[in-house]
Image (cartoon, rainbow, N blue to C red; front, side):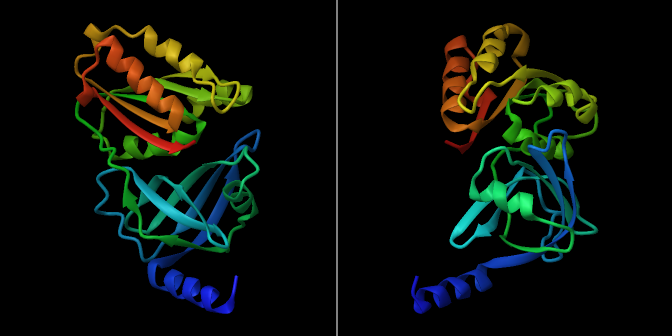
Length: 233
């Protein structure tokens, strides 16, 4: 990379990126999932009505989108819940963070997943937990939330309901990234007649999400009931 290109990139990042400070880092057991608390003084969270995506700089010309799983608009703080099992730039960056570190991010953008007043059903894997926690925070008190989440680590499955008390969520076994068979089986058992007022939120591995959406349409669920959000492929 020549110096002119480096200067152009630095200028663009100065113009479009903001700075956040790491307040705390907590690891699940085992540590394939991290909770990272951030202070984002330039971020107005009071207007959020949908789950947000924050594009973080994780390396030179390398960026990853993460969803604030919980936030406090008054203190300008939020938590990113990041799955770090893969040895990629995002995972290495997240594992390197320590309290006091600063990171660069772009202004949050809407994921177009909004909570509804009817029943909500969350379907995804461990990479989507933060996304679904964001929808829970945005939902009205007493919202009925159900669904199923694929988890790779057996210990995470054991402690699943300690993290997500109050949710009627099934913890399903995930053998590999592309393995959505357990989730497809869970969807196949759904009775369309019992879920006429349910909105389904599909998120995660793009091929898996696409196939789940097709499966639900074949079963007879209306298109307006199924909201899909692919994260990675």
